[in-house]
Length: 347
Image (cartoon, rainbow, N blue to C red; front, side, top):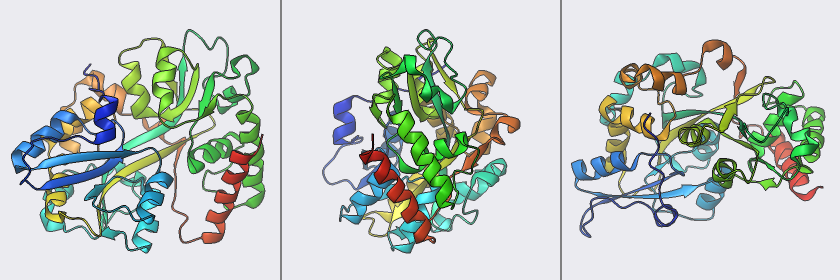
């Protein structure tokens, strides 16, 4: 198994620069951490005689807030699907020119169609799909129910667990645990979810989007709420780490590639999207990041052991639910924002 070549902290903080030369064009990418194979980035930079600088964010909300506050200069951004309509509504994105990205239409795997919120790809091209579940240390959790969200009620694990610092993901986990949709519009159901998360909060070390990978890996934490791609990277090197998709249900999220409305290099951004949809680049990218890209020829070219890691069966997939956009329902989105504020401020 080929494991993710994890990036040094300093490199992530400063961005990745490949193919240097001060007079060369620069592609600025804003994405999640450890989410593009550095070798694939270097290959693109060399092929296009450019530099690539990668900055990272740890939640859709943090990314959106930074852009809303006036941060500019990005070409490619990789938000989750549900965040994109709000960005479109606020004129933050450029429509894709499909004549410049022929590989998308040619190679997109239609079996992922049910996970796509915008099948027309007007503003976005799907990048990778992730499933949100529970990472755990097999040698530390004992008889705790690691196949269920109820694991967060295990007193013996108090102070050794984490939940995502992500409004929709964490409230969504509680909603599914209660038997509700993670896209519910019911104030009563959201209130019930708040009470459950507050119960869980009493047992966790912290809300966290980044540290859980290394904390569960190193045994500092025994349970971590997180993304399948992150945990698969850790499991690659540590046989004591496991990952479950809770039996009550879990979230499915596509992260997508969009081009900023004020992108300095939109043509280069289109080339990057098209490049990543080339099977010769998508395959090593998937093997490195350890998450599936909807590039049919690349998925077909994976060896069987890698397919077992990246592709889940249809029965399991049916227990997942896509996070949906709420930007056209401000009253509902406001319910979630107020609920998250109560969670963060409560005990």
